[in-house]
Image 1 (cartoon, rainbow, N blue to C red):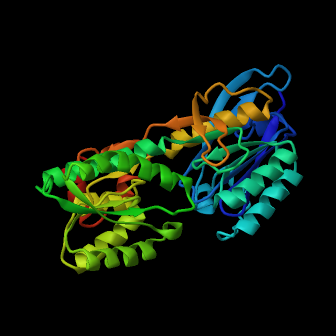
Image 2 (tube, rainbow, N blue to C red):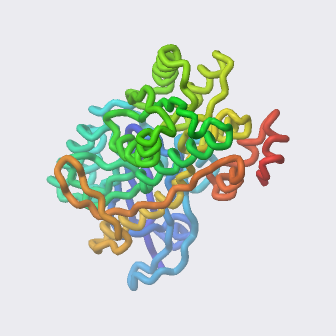
Length: 384
């Protein structure tokens, strides 16, 4: 039995091109044959935490699946992750350092090299729409990964249900304010939203405002300062929140859109010798440790393995000329009103009660999370 070998090359800000190439002998099948046959898939994932792609062995003549030989995980620290593994010889790392022009150029190069599917998590919708227009013009299919490119031309969209993410944040803040006795005492709630150029930030806000707006309307809480943070920049988040706190000393809770910005908010609160309910998102090690410290009331875990698996299934089907059957949801692009078939996964609310869920799912490791003073705190939180 003969087959193919998979070459993975890395372009730009977490841009990956998967190229299936002929293998010379059956020995090459041992750990590198991949589907689809003689097709190319380009995957662009900005800030990716992990991206998994199934490596499968198929009989070249019959197309029958012989075995699934493993899964490789593409991470931000690609060279370290693959050091000493069979995939290390297929990795080329380049980085556009957040440059949209470089990202566009790298996508064009990928198309020139024959990519049939572009899976993109764009830096912003403007550059993303340009990449998608070029891809469609070249006859490639496009999948929006993690965030929708507004006014784009994606055939499919894979993400978590980001409105639900926001709802979990709002619910987490309400629960924490109930627990600390500040519920129904007309406390001011400050909101630090994500980047105004990120459609996900809009969806998160839609979710948490659906929880908080009724509380503002009935007087349970007072709607306080509310501001987006450009580019999700953590330093700017701290500066913005410090201004909020200076202007309004009655803030009793802070809805923060992710863990990185929450860390900045917590630093400002500690500087002012305050401890208030603070939300987050992404289930980072830092965020989980803040939860164990009692400085952050919750985070949201989005299992990127599931997200990448869903994206891989779509990409493989499209590269094989098939119509995917897994995109059973629909997302409406608010700009061009296009109905984009979608896979929207369920996020998970994480509090002190279920931190171990993140570890159990592989979102982080006990070794990374439970260091120093957190060894005892992990034990108390049931981290295994």
